Image (cartoon, rainbow, N blue to C red; front, top):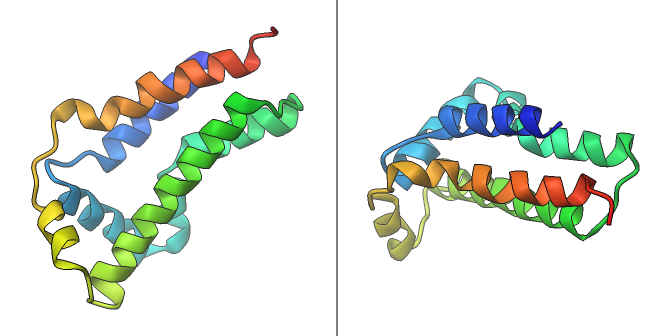
Length: 125
């Protein structure tokens, strides 16, 4: 289960990797334009954790933390797409942030955050 999570996190990181936040939002908007379902499918770890939680009947702090953080991440990305491409009305501060360079390891933060949380969630206490 942990190996599957690691693989899905690597896939997710590679699907969304970009040099700037703006480029990442551009890439995600490309998925969104093709299909809103495709946009949501480039977040496979959310669905995997939800499936693990439901299948193994695990509802603890760690599972809820993963699902909450991932939900907020997806909602933030949807809001950025909405402001930038649909409403075309974005705060100047946020527009400035979109141009900032991201470190190459930033896309892999989820790997070092969610995998240990999942391990703690499935490990009996």
